[in-house]
Image 1: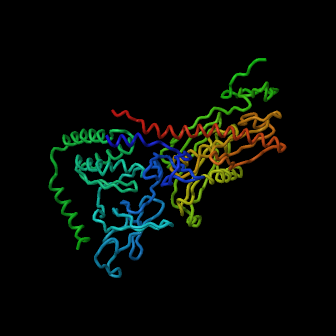
Image 2: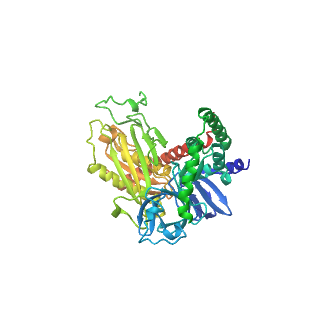
Image 3: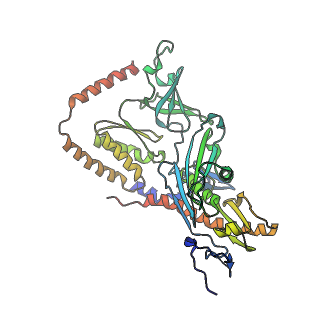
Length: 255
Length: 257
């Protein structure tokens, strides 16, 4: 209900559309005392600040964003991470772990190897777009296995849903692990990861539809019933093995 | 006098003696200040970050935009702003005689003027150290291909989410049989006296591209430019409509089966 009310207030704007007078927020610019939109999106106003929620475009890194990245290279005591943006991010050793590591004796690949995925937070970003990542937050971790789905970064808020409702629903129904990065990369892992991935793509495609949550819920439940019929015997041994494996790897960090 | 029919889509038959303008009606049936039919579509390509198709009569072009993305080769990178790279190409089948594929003197020049005409509206300083690549492919040429290319490119840039001050609209005007006409096309282009393409930045009422091929005195040139601006304003409305319709459709897509 609440969601729909705010929806109707929003107006679709394109570059050059006048938004009125006020302070120019992101996605806008000021000229001759008036604020105009600088991208395609939905115009909104909050506390006198006019801004536009973009409907297209690449990921624009912001401080505090949780992102999923891939290790591109390792230099001395830093990992260079590709975060699906034109700018690469740096994760320094001190931000990755609390323990003392002697880089002359231990290789950093032991902790995070090339091509491996991590979920990290953007700690700082400068005007020249030097990005520093941090893994000190409890949510941040290495992502092992699973699969990634690339979506339009502008549609990430829809995938997350209101205070995480959409993601929680996917997790609950499919029983998979889902991590959504603000940079448009979604990581899923679990038995029904295929169904979860389908749901994510469905959200991306129908992101503007009202009542999306119900639609996705119906779709997921239908798929899950079909899945259960297919494999009645769940290989529990395999699952246990996986859990053990995961615990061992996590120990390296927590020691 | 018989009235001329609007047959610009079938004007393959060429009458040798025919006058280009008769009673204020042109060879393809248009009035002096009438544009050819416009068609604009946004988001036609899947793999590009942003794309658009634009048609003006028989001239049609597709534009695709990538970026902002990393700059390769690295030495082209600029520390405080994004670089805009444009590439104008004409398909071998675009003209009546087959065109040689690959860049040539003409396409290099048009790439450059396209870049210059789009640059004033883009916030290049918002994405430092990146490149925005614009590729324009002319599918069919029937005069004012650069204008159609610019129109498509402006739409594609907006579709890609590149921050812009406004769109850029472009069209041409010229002189045929000593009369000022809008949107020179077909035979008028090859046999007319003058062709003047402009690109127009509507919000600031500025011109970002002005080229001229032909001879005219200053008062005439002024008149031609004014007419071309009028045409650009019409195109601008069509561009906005096309851009809105793509995203509005997504919004209203309420049908869930």
